[in-house]
Structure formats: structure tokens, C-alpha cells
Image (cartoon, rainbow over all chains, first blue to last red; front, side, top):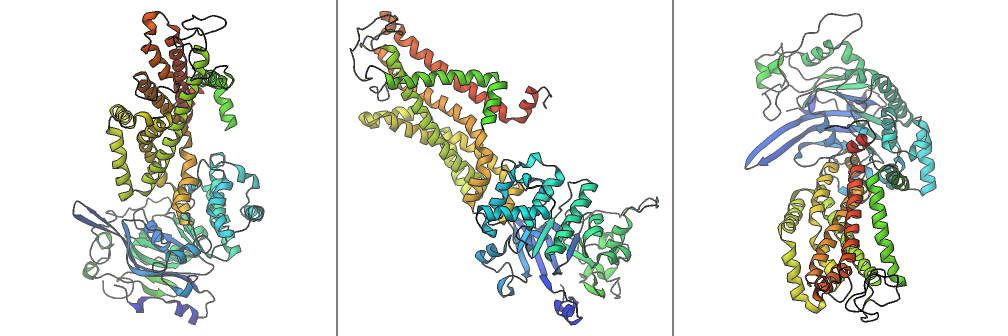
Amino acid sequence: MMTAAALPSDKKCVASGQPATAVLQVKGLKAYYRTRHFGVEREVRAVDGVTFEVRSNEIYGLAGESSSGKSTLIKAIAAAMRPPLEIVGGTVAFAFVPGGKDLHQATSAEVAAIRWRKLSYIMQGSMSVLNPVRRVRRSFEDFAAPHLGGTGASFEARVREHFALVRLDPNVLDAYPHELSGGMRQRVTIALATICRPDFVIADEPTTALDVVVQKDVLGMIRNIQREMGSSLLLVTHDLGVHAYVTDRLAIMYAGRLVEEARTPQVFASPQHPYTRHLIASLPRIGDAAPRAGLAGAPPNLASPPSGCRFHPRCPLAGDRCRRETPSMTVFAPDHRVACFAVSGGTA
Amino acid sequence: MLTTLRDLLRYNIEFRIGAILVGMVAVIAALSFVSPYSPIDTFVVPPDLPPTLAHPFGTTSRGQDVFWHLTFAIRNTLAFGIVVAAISRILSLAIGLLSGYKGGWVDRVLMSINDTFIVIPLFPILVLFYFVLRDHMSWFALAMIMALLGWAYDARLIRSLALSLKAREFTHTGVFSGMSTREVLVREHLPYVMPIVFATTMNNMNWSIGLEVTLSVLGFTDINSPTIGGMIYWANQHTALVAGVWWWIAFPVVVIILLFIGLFLLAVSMNEHIDPRSRLRRLGAGGGP
């Protein structure tokens, strides 16, 4: 597994004089789905040893194809697991949890105290985050009012003020969700998640259901709000265009593990991991009409993942070592980590 | 709510007819408050008179005015239906929402109780209750028994809705934001299932009133408080049809049929209103299959 030496710890960041400190530190996180039906046990290793950190005031992107474990990872980070999802190992430490405790060790009262106020979550498929039979105002009262406090009038004023920030008409408060357009609904959802000015926002595919024009608008708004509040954002989507547009740093996930992490422009300019290289090469580019070569094979079944590097059955550079050992995330360049034997210099 | 009612009255012929019928029956029931006779007194008017202007529905062999006696009977019957519906709604909502939302062993325990209530035959049990309770059997006791037996079907229906609501994002968001189970159920899920509950309420009233009439006709209830079934019971006791006193049976039967049809039409039209596909068809847009 990963060794401590391979981790670019937050100490390093402080030592190198970077003002940004880690708000979230995830170390060796393992989250498995464990089911037992009629005595047959099954274990899906959706997140298997993931280590990264999110610094303050940054947008951290997480990319990966479907079933690569993105959603499981953020459920684990938000401590929003439901059976059969279990945390098997690793820690999730937020800077704002008292005593720097692992979130999964915190009491339910401690977790309840940070949720929404410090840590909020824009859910996947957020078209239905709003209850279809409740007015928007009621959703705000249900979800946010207990955390914001304040009486009816002051709460109302706060919501209106926040609506101005996301360029929403205050009349939207009296609308039912079906009366709003997709973009407006998305903005309401984002306003709902950010009204308490949380330190950390998790956004799971926040713009998937929108067309590109509205998507750009909403993404620009997300970035503006994040910069204005100075909070950190973990943005999860398979859409690399979205990452290129808003994220500061980007991590690529494959089959439950991170394979590469770097500043976003760097990922696009000089991808190192073979998987990332294929991923970037598959993106269409203006003026380049050459057909894109597909990658042979399919993502592995996480119930019985391949040994060693999980990418080796599809990897053109795979060697014997890749089948036997699991490569750990190694610092390739400043702010650039790769989990590949072929890249980190060793013999593949 | 008010605009929905107005739209239903304006565009839905079934709802309009149903509302008029139930309204008529309600007016008859309300007239009991201005009745010149007490419902328990007998021989206050000459017996066996056919319908005349003085006694529009005639008089019974027991010397009661059929019309005024009917106002008491339908009031009790209606109140019975409403009480049963209200109590069984509370039970089915609480059990259905909790069972669907909680899942796991809570769901298994509640649904096995639920299925037990669905399969046990109600009629023999109600008769049994009458023989056990005898003189203690009042219409309120019967209403409580029926309510405790009549929630199971709708609890299953509500549970199936709750199962789907549980997987929606607004539930996850609510839980994530720290809402308790009670808050999620009452504030997020209850408003969603209410329209369906309204529709099933009408059906439940029809069911409970029908069963109550059946029991009363057979004499398995408190026959001294006037109900529709009780009236028919007494008419049968006095062999009204053989004696030619047809009005004693005909008018209660007509009124209860009007109530049944009215409630049924309300239930049907509300069902249709809730179902978006049939609503589209009504608007002429052509729904799905």
C-alpha cells in the first residue's frame, strides 16, 4: 500500500511557503460495498486507498469514468454512507472538525454541527434536490434555517441577499420547482448549499443535466461564489471540459484509485499516467479532425479487481511489476503526483 | 388548494356530480339539527302513513317520520365514515411512511403486521366483536374497531410511495442537512402523499359505511342509535315490504346509494386529477398508453 514517504503532506506545502493550508486531508481511504445474500459475501472495492488533500480557497476537481468510484468517494468524505457502503480503512480529516478528528470517528452531534454550516453538499442529479410539492422557500426553511438561525424576517433577508449573489429573483422563493428552468433550479440548489457560507462544498456532477450554455453560466457562478466566500470546493464530474473551465487542481480516478493529480492546466498539457494520456488524447480539439483511437478493454469489475495496478490489463506500458505490485502516488514534479511505475522512473 | 377545487369543479364532470351528491347528503344530515322530533322517540306521528306533504317520506310502523329520522340516520352514518377514515388515515400514513422510509427490520415487522390485517376476513371478526361486546357496542366503538382494521391496504400504498421518495435527492439533502426522521417524513414526504391520501379517503369511507350498513341491517350493531342500516333493520323487523310500507326502506336506500355514488365519483375524479397522464388526455394532448 501507500507509504508515508510517497505522500506530499501538508507540511511540505507549508514548508514551501505556500499560503494555502489543507482543509481536507484524505489518507488511504477505503470504502467498500459489502453485501451478504444467502451466505454469499460480496465485496465491491469502490474506493481503495485514496489519498489527497484539498487546500483552502481552491476548487479541486475529481474526474473519472462511470463506476470509477467518484460518488462513493464523496459519500465517504461527507460521511453520508448508508449500508452496504462501509469505511474499511483510512481517515478523512477536515480542518474545521474540533481537534482535527477523523470525520468517521466524530460523534453524530459533532458531525451534525458541521454539516451545512461548514460542510455542504450539492447532490448529484440536483434537478430533484428540491421537493416538487414544496415551494422553494420551504426547502430553504427545512434545510438551511436550523443552521442559520434567525427569525423569519432576518432569515428571509439573508436568503434574499444570497439570491442576489447567484443572480436569482427573490420571487423564485415563492415558486414551485417545476416552475423554474433547469438553470434556475441549479442556481437555487447552489444557493441552498452555500447560504451558510460553508468552508467546504462538495459538488457531485453539478451541471450534468444542463446544456453547455447554461452549464458555462452556472460554472462561472460557482467559481465566483467560491472566490467570494474563500471556501474550498470539491467538484466531481466525468466531464473534462468542466474541469478545464473551473478547477484549480485535478485528480484522475480509475477503478477506485487515484492515478494522477496535478494542477489542472498541467494535466491537460502534460499528462503522465498512461490512462490520463489516453483520456486527454480522446478529447476533441478544434481543427483536429483525426479519429480518436479507443482504449481496448473495459474498466474492471470492482468486485474482483485485477492484481497490482488496476490499469495493467489495458495499459500499453504494462510490465511484470505492474501485475504484481500496486504503484503508489509518487511526486513526479511539484504539485504533480502519478501512480505509475513506468513514470516514476522505476522499471515497469 | 382552492384553485384546484375550482378547476376540478369547472372541468371535471365526475367531480361536479360527486360534489353535488355528497353536498345533498350533507345538507340532509345537517337538517337533523332542526328536526322537530327526537330520534329515539317512537309513536310521535301516526304510523304507516304514505308520503304526503306533511310527511314527505311517509311515516314508519313505529310512528316515526321517515324524513326526519333519515336526517339523524345519515348524519350518524356519515360521521361514522369520517371517523373511520380519519383514524385509519393517521395509522396508514404513520405506518406506511415509516415502513417505506426506514426499511430493514422496521419495514419487515410493520409489513408483516400489515399483511396479516390484509388477509384476515373482516366480516366474521366484526360479528365476533358484536357478540363479545354486546351492549357495550356503540357506533363509536365500532368506528374504532373498523379504523384499527381498515388501514392496511393504504399503508401498503403509502409505503410504496415512501420507498420511491426515500431515493430522491431532496430526502438525501434533508438527511444531510440534519433533519430528523420525523421531520423528513412530516415536512418532506407527507405533502407529497397527501393527494393520494385524499383519494383513498373517499374509498375508505365508502368501504366503512358499506360494512356498517351491512352489519346494522343484520342487527350486529347498536340498533338503537339511528343509522341507515339500522333503519333498514327495523323496517325488516316490521316486515315493511310485505306490509306495503315501501317508503320505510326505499328512502334510506336511495340516500345511501346517492352517498356511495357521490363518494365514488369524488375518488375517481381525484385519482384522475392526480395522475398526470390522464390529466393530459383530458386536456386533449394525448397521454401515454
